[in-house]
Image (cartoon, helix red, strand yellow):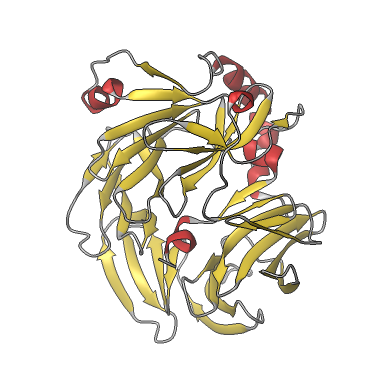
Length: 363
């Protein structure tokens, strides 16, 4: 099984390299500048905001993110570094009490492991890492499985890896979140809660969900709209009242939400799988607070203290930057010099950040 970051590299490598070089013209690291105005209505407020250009090699060393992440085969929980004997490329799936659930990737495929804070680990599942979502509590993880012509929702224990429940579901479904015994499901033309025990469904919206976080009461829906570059736009709303609209955008899609739900990170709706060159910090109504730019961004998010965690890559180096809301940035990891085949900062750093739902649910 291929690692998620490798999808489409063979097709996109030449184009990505060219695009990266074109996008690297900038100023010195962490330099704030004023952007030129444009006439597009949705862009006007963006162009008035300051921006910061991040050059990894120019950042001074600062504190580590107050969240869970991996570098290589090491799991980081805040200041604690937990070294494991697992394959080097780990992906964080979620938290479970005093353990971290990770997926590992090697030449034979993927596997899911439970890593304790003392460094010991236990394999839970062989394969099945793609699309796995870990519950915010209760020791559960779930994924949509597609054996043959069937489609089903499987729920496993994060302590033992044992299959707990299995239910048939329709095609085209995606899990956006998992809270207690309910999964939030995106489907063509609808978004709904599904109780994994009773199989009862509660419909939230008549559009397909794109992004959600229950702890931050955030839901973003894909709405068919010819004004969008791909025929759709994003409607930002809340899980508690999906009938409201806090922001509507045909240019920006969500990447992360802060723990208190007051700030968003967004990227261009047309950014490809290799990663964006621009990340915007916004209020929930879409007002831009600050813009961050670099050669290429990988994983982005917030830590528990609200700082931005940005995996950033310039032409020759990569690091994990920690930035405040005014654009001041430091680096949290060593600067990694790039090889020719390092197409994204996550690959160069072997970096993985705790998913948004799992990151916030332990508030």
